[in-house]
Length: 224
Image 1: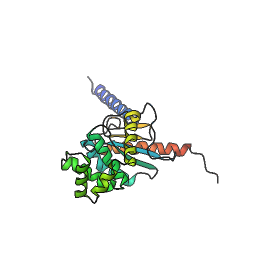
Image 2: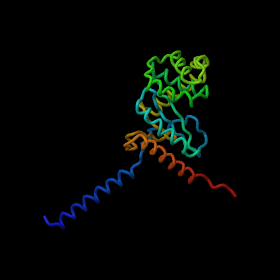
Image 3: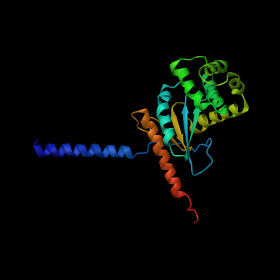
């Protein structure tokens, strides 16, 4: 085979590889839900809601915490971030109620990282409300009595029941972590083609900003 033929084959292979790579990057980093889901907290149509479905027992969710925290410092103000601890039976209900109790107490900032430390570092395995309350009281400034009082309260139970409906009936996911964007688009490690946890969050940011841009374009012009 001549040197020219070899060069042409190498060039052809390189061009093909480049084309395939560009096609891969051109594909969306999400999949659409079969039916749009309800938004959790966002009512302004010009804004975008990002829901993270996570679990305190999920190692991947734990690894995502730092990239998510960094993103929250820089995300557009019109992107509203919501967390849902995966609901379910037994442990899953306890952990979901824990997160919603922290929300009701306005103690997510202290309690959320403490719960990851409880499960991933301190290996807490007693997930009844009293054990969780005792752990949080020992490791944060969260009041155990107030925590246990709110555990079965109407606001916490309502949040939990809504989470069950959203995750099981609308998102139809049974794994974590996963992000639901604006009730329509699902992003996870597979859809984002990520090679790191940071790249999953980058995909969430990218899809969110694309949606914000489309909403801005579609919005009627303001009268001067």
